[in-house]
Image 1 (cartoon, rainbow, N blue to C red):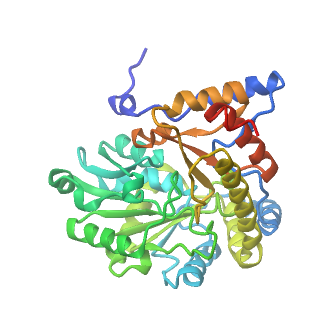
Image 2: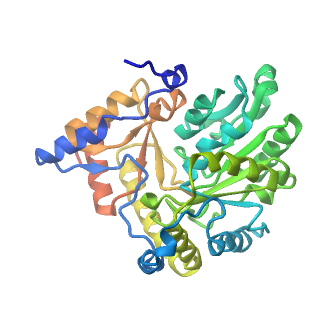
Image 3: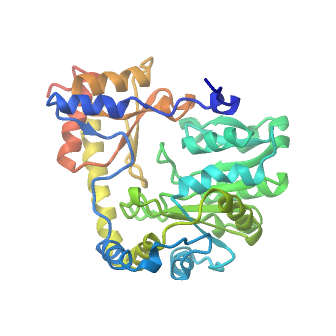
Length: 393
């Protein structure tokens, strides 16, 4: 049997790999499963995107290789989005790169900037692609715990000097998955200055920039002075436009940084399909008319779930962004056994905090991926496992 590489052996297990099979078996036995695990909402994409896909996929020209240049119309819509939304001007052909989902670009980034043994600074808990991309590029992922007492921000001033000297990429993600934390402007200024001072690429994962509530408006890292020197910002249509399976996103940054990532991609793929880019452009054009209703749906879901959790005695604030609730567990309760018990006994799937990294222990994540009445039912079932006495009401 051929042996696998040490890099592959070094990868942590991907979170809950056996859960899809468990859910399938439960459903086959007639169990009513409520899936709040993955950030994959049950909502429809914008009609404009569906219509554009249907019309453009019939054109044989749109079935040819897109390569990295892709569709000029999509690049230009991205540039208009960045200007309209953040007041940031970008060159659509030199400072934008379409991606096959932002995860793909985030994963490939270390191949462009790491030498063997170089370090990436990774939030713990955090998105698994940060660590996976680092390890498979021959780098070292230095996990930095983000905790409530530090407002779920990486404490940049507390990092060991020897780690900072080897660091080449800093991953930041605000609004944050899984914690829903926000980064104040002062912190973003600190992060940009840290990266400029230490010659570090700032990979700013802004996948949840449009899923915000209560008047909060998430910023772009490029609203911070000096960010153009060091930052690549990643966006996605997956969550904002309910297009997870379409696999479409983009990176924005200085031409030199974009060119480095584009070179990696030139060896790994031949571009996002033209018909998907046409649909993505249509989605962006429809944003101002279509998106507010979608965000309002998530707000109602957030409010319903938070109300039910508080009724169980769970101390939780209503987050101002993302599609997640980061729920504390009773002291001493391990998140993975809790999540497994919840699924097997009550048919509710959630993400145990430890699946997002050791720093996530003591929490579990709820994704707002089902209607309010289903969320309320799910929380009632959660209560039977989490706080049995409080669940009887």
